[in-house]
Length: 302
Image 1: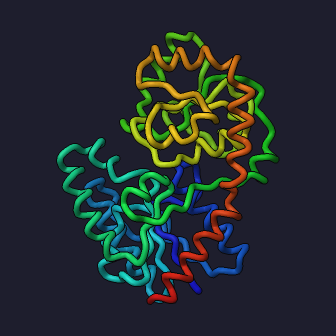
Image 2: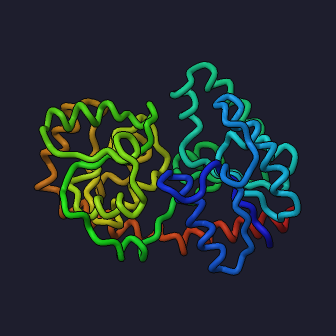
């Protein structure tokens, strides 16, 4: 079986990029032939409004002859209309994210993407509640426990923000919180760019990782923080409420995040241990086996 993994990014520090890189690693270790189709090796236009549609055309040319086309962004779902029986689509965030970012235009785009996705051989989500609500397959996000274990901690302890400069990540709330706390912080992905290894090293020495997002699916940074034994303060949204015993939940206000931070001395040991126990189920070797089973099912049907 030959599989094409299609996403704008592969590797790096983005959540979907990390997911694709780990999926490739696990597939290769399992003897599955893999093609990576990303923006580095696929024709596309750099204009924001034309990036997805042009990348879709380029990806179609790059995926001829493969048995399974695994798309990692709903914006690329048009490929499922042309090669429906071969396509699997994974939703890493949630379809509501487009409406949150783009308003009415986002809602219209979401309806079109959902229509295209219905043609696919299968749709998966990394978020269990999103999968159940839409009738999709739940395959969780994953991380690499062995590699994280080998990374040494940084030599400073700060409050961490890790995420792209995007309104959905709600960085301005994080800044308001750390300014009021008067604590040292690092904002990877917004104020500075860092390698994945450096981010993990800071997680291992951090006071806490603060996630302030308006919406998330099952973010890689959560799993990486758990694997690094870094306490997590996160918003009270569906992505995090199922894991309330492994993090500290807060509302989207500075006061609530400050209150959560004040609970760290009391709860740190408990939530770190709970998170570390949970993340063992999300090691990439276990998760990749679920994808291989789904590939075989879709391949057999086609």
